[in-house]
Length: 339
Image (cartoon, rainbow, N blue to C red; front, side):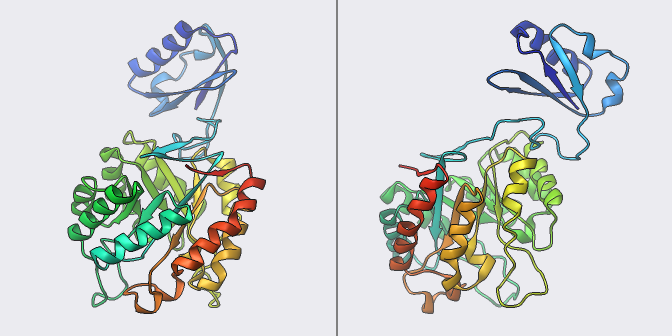
């Protein structure tokens, strides 16, 4: 449930309500807006049943939250969140551009890519050091060696770096090198990994599962937030349907739905959604048109030679063209590329 305070409620009144909730073994989350303060209550509500909280000083009303996710719910936090990652921001007013290879193949390739995407306007270098592949014989990534290359690329370019983690061991290693971790589609409901990501405290990009509903996706985010980590960005990357013309089917409607249900930023991955580089530009434009806070795009110096996802990777020139084409769309949606 949420407790909505009166517009003129004093800080002392808010503090008393918060202390009362916590003294009964529940957790209180404060959301201080420009006009009112909302106190979100998480835990077993039977502990305060019959407490007449609505009679406490400064309380306006109590509203039940029927959804199973609480902390990431917009009812708990009506104002949209802006997540700070390194020297960049993800959220309203900003357009976050993440770009890089699907898999980190070697030092020189990654550094060359970092310089190219930086020049084109990206603020983040993405790269896979741990690769969850359908076949056990496919390239699985360079692991910590690749993370070291990511760190060196950040030092050389100033880009923030993001890498997917696939296990607790990978998470413990990655936090020493990167600015943000990614939980991929196959691990969206790996609840133990989600809880560990919450405990780690580092910003998390949470991709939607292949067949996950939006509520399941938000509940996965709740696992991270419930461990004390509010720095979560959602990523729509397409879901599995009966259509075979594209790699997945991008659920473009998920962006406004998330906007209505959650305060968390949400970005789009047009590369995995389509699997075809020719479709990335129109899908990216559509994503900005419906309110996406950013894009994560696969870029490779030589896609035909890529060890992973070559057909959906852009060349440096194609990525630079993409960012140029997105400028007016960003402006129309009230967003600017982060400096």
